[in-house]
Amino acid sequence: MPSWWLTRGVIARLLLPLAWIFGAIVALRHGLYRVHLLRMHRVDVPVVVVGNLVAGGAGKTPVVLALIEVLRARGYTPGIVSRGYGGRVDGVLVLDGQTSAAQAGDEPTLLHRRSGAPVAVGRDRLAAARALRLAHRNVDVIVSDDGLQHLRLARDAQLIVFDERGVGNGWLMPAGPLRDALPDHLPPRTLVVYNAGAASTALPGTLGIRSLAGVTSLAEWRRGGEPSAAALEALRGRPVVAVAGVARPQRFFSMLHERGLTITPLPMPDHHAYATLPWPADTADVVVTEKDAIKLDPLASGRTRIWVAPLDFRLDADVAPALLALLPPPRSR
Image 1: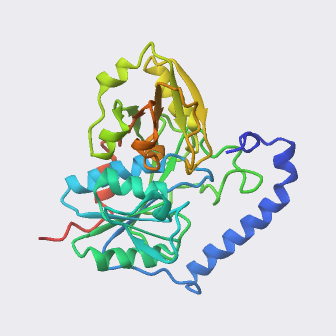
Image 2 (image 1 turned 90 degrees about the vertical axis):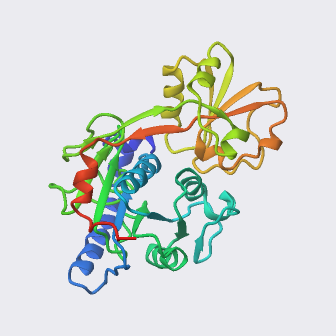
């Protein structure tokens, strides 16, 4: 998110006429769905959409992973559909164990690896949801990652995610970060999750807590190894390069600082492909996010030790009962 999206300064004000046009288009689109000139389509299982109102990411991936665990704990068999940004999908792709981040995009590949849930990617979320059900008939609830504005796919519930930036300057794109107008009241069948531990808008919602679970070597992470708090503590006092190709790299760097690490931050563009390694060849220790790790080859790191720091995110206890009240019970096996 550019800094001028956080204030109503000169650049934002110059772009305000374009934001009015954008707002009119968004309102027209919503209106066409309301009068059924554009149709929402249902799939044969309930759908939960996780998204954000602001452009540039607000930390949805950890929320999706936490939501998958909540649904499993209540007896559901969840699957995931996602856009697959950065991948090479033409149409729809259902991921398997051989699918790479270059094919499907980094976030869907990470969601598949971390959750173990079936994942389908495609620009058309409805087509992706249908393909997922055809490939995995046991899936009885679908979580749509970043599908808030994809109105064609009908949903039973939606979670809107905000981080510490809230809605920035409160204006629509391109004058501000909003992809849709901030509602005065919470829409029906909608829950709000604040993932930075504090409410950042006036909408009522629940708080999530994020923390670093520890670190594990890239090779062990690839094999499904669990992060170790002791391994993270062992990096204290050593020079460490911290790499983050995510929308908000400073969050990752701050969490490492809070755990006592001395880091040289190396922010990369969101969804960076890592065709070449961006740190000096003689670097001893590098810590990366999981979103970066999914695109790194352990054999290409040379003498550098690459550590992966998974993010642990816990939803508030109120989310599960509120969400389950909006869904039909899981299918009997």
